Image 1 (cartoon, rainbow over the protein chains, first blue to last red):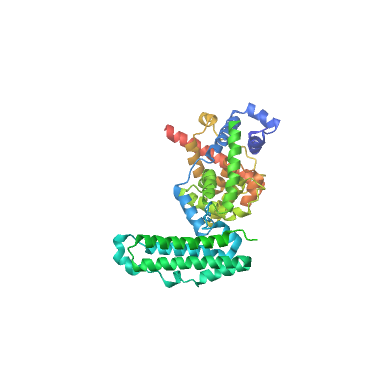
Image 2 (image 1 turned 120 degrees about the vertical axis):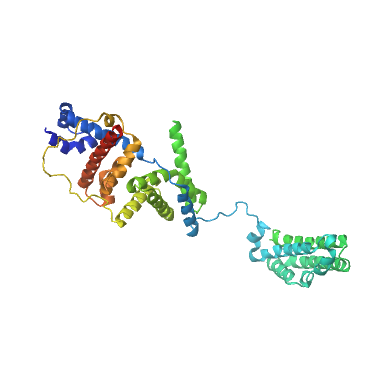
Amino acid sequence: MTCAEFQYQLPDLLEEGGSPQLQAHLKDCAICSGLATNLQAIIGEARILQASHEPSPRVWNSIEIALRKEGLIRQPQPRNRHFLLPSLTRRWGVAAWLVPAAAALLIGVAFFLHPPSKTETLAKDSVPTPVLVSTGDQNDDQLLQEVASRSPMMRAAYESNLKDVNAYIRDAQDSVNADPNDEEARQALMDAYGQKSMIYEMALDRSLP
Amino acid sequence: MTDRREQQGDRLSEAQAIDKAKQGDAEAFEFLYNLHKRRVYSLCLRMTANTAEAEDLTQEAFLQLFRKIGTFRGESAFSTWLHRMAVNVVLMHLRKKGLPVVSLEETTEGDDETPKKDFGADDPVLSGSVDRLRLQNAVDRLPPGYRTIFVLHDVEGYEHNEIATMVGCSIGNSKSQLHKARMKLRDFLKTSRAEKAG
């Protein structure tokens, strides 16, 4: 085998080991042997170039920005997502909003009932809107309609309860209006709304047949 | 055994990260990125010899991956899928720049048979080991076509039939280009060693 023939087949030697003739020429020819050795060293070291560098942080920053812009990153829902009354939406569907509405009334009243130091300012602002004390308000009617649709026998009981608690609210409101500084009156109004909120919750959360 | 367990753990974590990424989990995306960024970036860097381009191409490769991650079914390894994507991104970039992905030289098969005996004596330095930095510099100096084939085959481990498909050449051409790339590298390394000694 000549050197030219060997060098022509050298790639095969490097990749697959080569024929016996190639191996024999390697033993006999120092130049071709040196060449093969050099190339094998280069091949052996080439793999160290794999994964040898790290990109700058700006690469990930750019990727993340693009992903968010394209909507590919979606914010996870909180695991323990707390609804005001988790079972309500499951059982009552749309009507479940009535309970948070009642709670909102309670919170709204609490917001208006401030400490005595701000009494003068609050005396003007602390008067709740009439809708909060109306016994015939829309929320009550809708609650009763929901109760009636699910258990007509219970409607009367809830209507009676709502009538009583609305009267309680009315009386407490009158006391607050008469004396905004009266802490007991303010607390009584808070309690009244609390009771109404409980009635809503009971109506919507109890297991009806 | 420890390495194997760790590898298994990594595979399980990668699978979980892929599932979460499909649902749009930000941490999952970042996990997958950190797992594969070095390989992808190094590939881009070796093939372009330009850090800014390599970073842009790395970004593009991962974005393409993440956009399509919902279609990943696990028939092949995730890393293989990503790597192929990265190679395609780089090759498209080279074509857009007008750089030859593969040298236009014909294969040497059937060429003249003039004996070539002028390779010089065996270089003891090359016989033993090759300095990584010198090798990196030498690869960067290669013409783009040679560099592509060398990086894909000797650095990244692709077979000639795969390279031929990716770059659009024949298997014979791929082998020929690779051999020429290695010969060129040998020349560069000998030259740089001589310059260093001088």
